[in-house]
Amino acid sequence: MLKFTKLRLKNWKNFKSVEVDLQNRIFLIGPNASGKSNLLDAFRFLRDLASSGGGFVEAVHRRGGMNAIRCLAARKKTDIEIGVELQEVEGHHWKYELAFHQDSQRRPLVRKERVLRDDKAIIDRPNDEDRKDTERLTQTYLEQVNVNLRFRELVTFFASIRYLHIVPQILREPDRVQGRSNDPFGGDFLEQIAKTPKRTLTARMKRIQKALRVAVPQLEEIELTRDERGAPHLRGKYRHWRPQGAWQNEDQFSDGTLRLIGLLWAAMETGGPLLLEEPELSLHPEIVRMLPQTLARAQRRTRRQIFMSTHSPEMLHDEGIGLDETLLFLPKNEGTEVELAAWDTDIPHLLESGFQLNDIVIPKTRPANASELFMFADA
Image 1 (cartoon, helix red, strand yellow):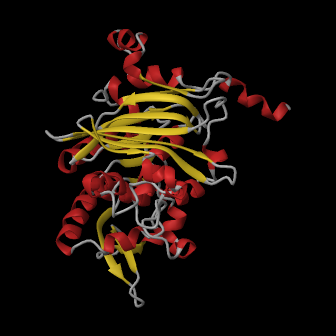
Image 2 (image 1 turned 180 degrees about the horizontal axis):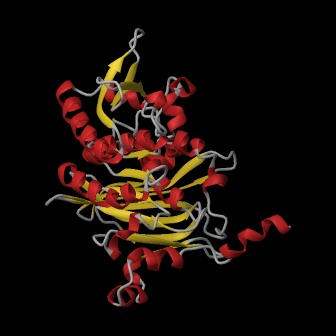
Image 3 (image 1 turned 60 degrees about the horizontal axis):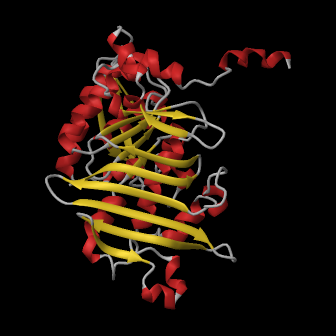
């Protein structure tokens, strides 16, 4: 089992230069448009490189091309770079480094690609064959099964990274994204559930049902069914004036119920990191307060890393959140800076004085002139 231990970015979207250590759980805190989603997207980029139907050129294209990816603060050194370090449980230490640019025809080309295991290079590009045929630099070795055998476990791990940001309207109307697989916004979420082996499906649904009885008033039971066309549906039984209660399909569930079901399901899966954007959306503050503990309990089963962005003071109210688990996003003229809360010498002193983490980091990352927003009607 692998896990990420470090991330390095250069000229990647909001970030001119970033280097941070990664724990099993990371909270991304910062103002709107500061780059929280874009930092998560670096992991999605690695997944796209390694996934079937993806690859280097396609991954760049999905993001609007090189000019859309490159940081606006980049000047002389404009190559885009992504580097990660990973650790096996009581095993090998891995590094993957990728730098790329574009040629005169605006094609993305690999400038550097390295895989190291225990600091010994397995691949180091460009090599002699690349120099003889530069067309080879339109592909990474990650995506080529004929050359990635020696680091196949790295490829498999990258491909297992999962981004989840369920949009309830899409889950209710999956025809909007028909044909997509592993849709991060929920278009095929019910199909993913339906494909789960029966024993695993039953166990997970029982756990979700137990949680929903706490979070959703009147909900007594939840199950997966199929309609006459064979399409899967979630069905929930609510306490009602009728003795047998009332059943509703997912198209009648609240936004918060659908998002919580998706979140709980994903937390029980194994694989690479689970990337979450604002999991608190549509949920009651008291439920949000319990999310860090709920996810931590799930992690003890799956050993899966969870990286999540949040604007919620309730999410950060949990005293179990460590300063080395909290990334602060600080927009500057030369791109957003990212630092661990542990690097800020003021924060430990404030915690010792009785302040909560949410009382400290939310004000530290708020927009400078947020109080002036109310003046928009006078403009």
